[in-house]
Amino acid sequence: MDPTSSNTLSDDERVLVERFRAVTDPEVRAALLLIAQIFAEYAKIGGA
Amino acid sequence: VSAPHVATQTDAERAAAHASRKAADARRLQAEQEKVRGLERHVKRLESTIRTFLTADKVTEPQRAELVGLLAGLRPHARGLIDPKYAGITKPEQRLVDNYRAMSGNHARLMSGLAAELAKLDRLEEKKGGT
Image (cartoon, rainbow over all chains, first blue to last red; front, side):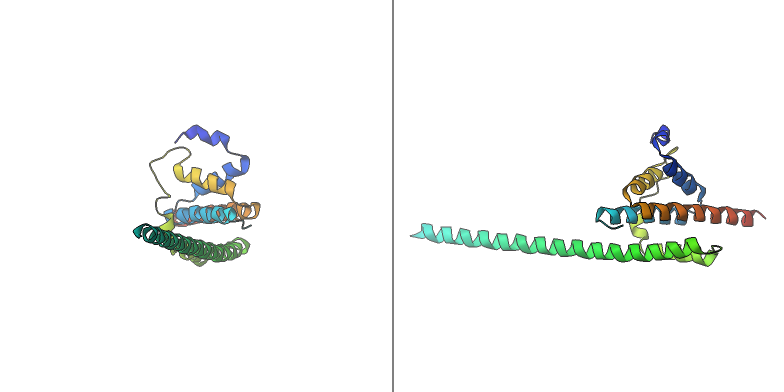
């Protein structure tokens, strides 16, 4: 993965990534990723 | 004499195949609808838990554990999301951003707030561990 791709992030995306990086517990990190996945899937089916 | 018979059989087979495809489509549609309903239930529970989490005066370890526990049942779906071999913007981070872009504004705000709280909690635990 290209580390310079962070340049393409918006401010709020960068903040999110920084917050995510600050979480060190792998279980909590997995939980955050899963939540993002579920919310994105939900949006795909028209959920708010 | 036998030709019309063969034609009739073929029609019957065709009709049977069509009916079978229709039944399979209906089963697939039903499975999809069940999946959507399941997802909706998960999202509603998630929203509620995250809101409780974010509005708590002070996030406690049991609350954090509750959130992690809630997601434990979904853990198999998270398998493969974390790949530690990537540096910089990692694969999971890229996926996080992709999903963040795809979600609604309401969920994006919840997501960012939750990440902030969990990061804060992480720092507190680190301090606690260090003393």
